[in-house]
Image (cartoon, rainbow, N blue to C red; front, side, top):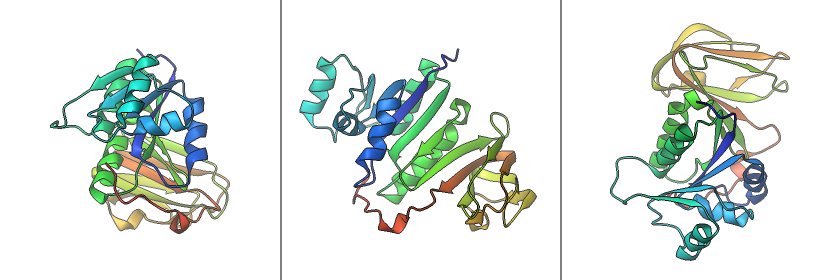
Length: 231
């Protein structure tokens, strides 16, 4: 049963220098879930998560003790596990029956961790999953759950369509490079860097799972400093 609440899942791979972005999301969340060192990002924004999940191998013990004393639910898992801490956080959100899930601070650092985090986003389409980062945001579409996305991006906004978890059949309108029932292979460059040319844009995943990744206008992603490691 969906509760109507909106959950925020905070990972442990933030963009350096984007503290205000994360703090705004953290302070506005109905249900706050921290995955491993995401706890420290939440505490830096002056909020204790309702749930902390992970093996906590990269968390300051004092931060974990503070969250415990403040009443957070601590879901500790062994380091030897077959799911990422981020996936465990999605499980918590699903069990809570949230209406929407936003994932943040999860997409920088090691390429394998980043790809896995995008897979986590794609696998949470049933929760209306979105990713929110300083320079971009992403929406997961899937044929049987949420297949269509209507956008009103400013003219000239660049966004990409990435098929994940296999190929996807995609249509997109209101853009420089429209597609109609086009078969997009997984992680194909064919969906890169489309441009909004109409007042509204419409993306449809007719088959398969699709990520719509939108660059935020006015933000130069090359100027953002990334941490060396995503734990």
